[in-house]
Length: 186
Image 1 (cartoon, rainbow, N blue to C red):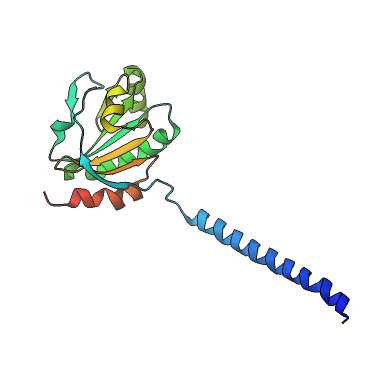
Image 2 (cartoon, one colour):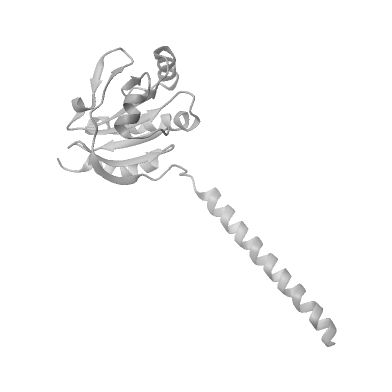
């Protein structure tokens, strides 16, 4: 083979090798992504006192976070118009049903919507955990220092916020991060 032909073939071989490696890497990435079923956010571990928060529930009864001291409470801030809020509601309901007899509750605080719209949403999604209303979202925004929906905060039995996250969550993630807090001794 002449030097001129060799000079043309080497770059082609390198190009073919590069394309093959790129295709293999792309396939591996796609395969990993398709195998992953838990697309929920990962909670951040925090450690600060739960805020004082008093609101009314969908029945019009005044409720306070302080009333739940001694329980593990997942406070979920949400709205009916929020797609990730809608997506996570079945997971929250399933997790609540499984763990409510272990001193766990969810308090879902709605972001400023009409009571009738919230009640319709609760009925449509068959939610059985407490749902509170924040008509202006100011109380919740100030108490939890967030504007994001959905946002969730896990308060331990002693009144300390231990986990927080922004975005939708799945049961698998709740089991991994919240269940150990429920299982802790008082």
